[in-house]
Picture 1 (cartoon, chains in turn orange, cyan, red):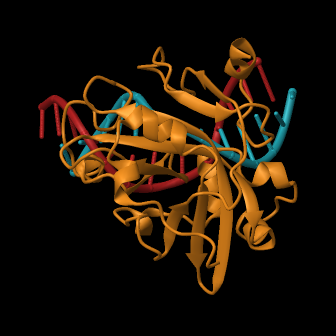
Picture 2 (cartoon, helix red, strand yellow):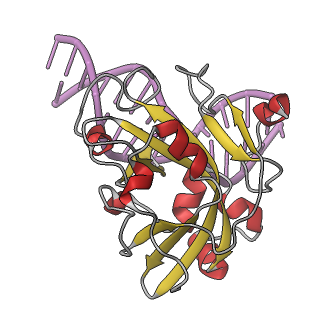
Length: 204
DNA sequence: GACAAGATTAGCT
DNA sequence: GCTAATCTTGTCT
């Protein structure tokens, strides 16, 4: 896995919308036990503490969201609906409560291991086409909260080996009751692993 | 302390 | 397409 190098801190210190878009096509490298799992990011959503009521970091710092206010490149993992985890990458400088939710990835290697983690799932697409599904497949849980993706530890993010061209589609975010009018969701056009949703059609 | 709600998913109709 | 599952977190008392 020498070919993958973590993106530098600078990548994450930029505007959150830019980071959310540019994370598309990047590679997540997850080391768990003696296994290495890799997957390509195909769908993201931006959450902006300052003006976004849907963000956990809206207006104030709490015990749960404090990591979102840390420096860009940190990982924010939260537990939801009694069962599931969601995986975010913090962006911008320390003191700004912004992050990008990773909503879907495309498995590249370690697929057999991912199937084991997603016990009972055999379809490749079902493995990682959802924010909590990919957490299970990549063995992401709250123990990764606060980790840093700019060094090669348990998990990091790299440029792809070969740069490929793709079109980015923008839409409203999914699964929210508030703040749903912001066009803060980004995904790779025609990628199989992007979550199925009516918004996909409207925009295309 | 107690309580309601949630950035979802799987399973059933 | 609809709903239950399930428990942490934040807010209020």
